[in-house]
Length: 350
Ligand code: AN7
Image 1 (cartoon, rainbow, N blue to C red):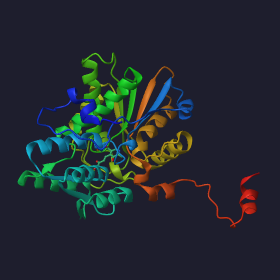
Image 2: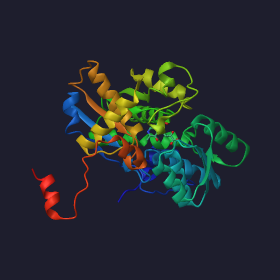
Image 3: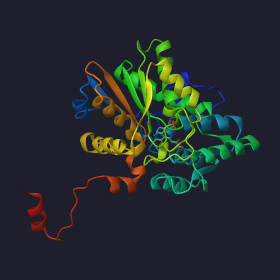
Image 4: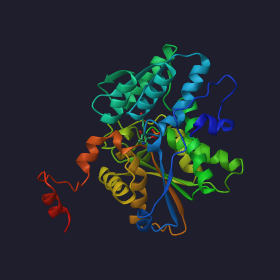
């Protein structure tokens, strides 16, 4: 019986006697041990932290549950967020569970259909704008500054607090921190949250080591790599199609303090990692989530030696979020046959 993030990690979160405790079953996601890709990488151990198993299918639920709990604690009944899709699905779900009015602001034509379907089903008020995520976020910030509406994007510190529990779970599962952590980076809240989580567990003595962080952005949306805001970000990985990350400084801090790096991968590299993860490990994620593995494969190709390393790749969201790309991208072994046993048998059994 999952207890949820607020109960499991209460003592590490800003929870007091007035904070409502509830759960949709977020957290306790599987750390899946690689059987096949590990051989390509040649590392000691490779794990995938599959955040697609959260209740709305992405890591956002870990932070959303706390952000919404703290909003309720204050007596706020309206929440708002800008989103490339997953934050809005998560906000809409927790908003529905708690009876809040949820407003989401999303870029027109750039949200994967599964995510939009979720927001519609959960009954959020959906504002589709003719602009990108970055302008949606500035509208959401202004709305929350002028009205009693809680902003539940990751600039809300409670989002980061909740999301840091994923780092705790990794250490709890393997009884140590990995040497290397690979993670997709968009608005940069998650990389900041993982760094905070690993540091806190380290300082409390739960791990003796800190991972080196390897953040990966999509090449067409890689402001943290180039050091410049991207006015018109473009990538197949719509979740990380972000040109001006809100947690810019904290991402750089996670990179530098961990002795790591933030680099980019092309859409082709993302797609190839996405296919490999599904067809070789049974893990179906959305394109953005494959940026972490794409980065690891790229580093291997460029000559890195990982033989003595334990590596964790964060896989941020579920493949069902983006069915159009799944069908378009994947090399299906698919055929139409006559409606009888023999014709199917003839083709498949030889
Ligand atoms: C699957 O939902 O920004 O670097 O508005 O959905 O913390 O932004 C989503 C981001 C990676 C990047 N993988 O995380 C949103 C949104 C998936 C995501 C990221 C997102 P951050």
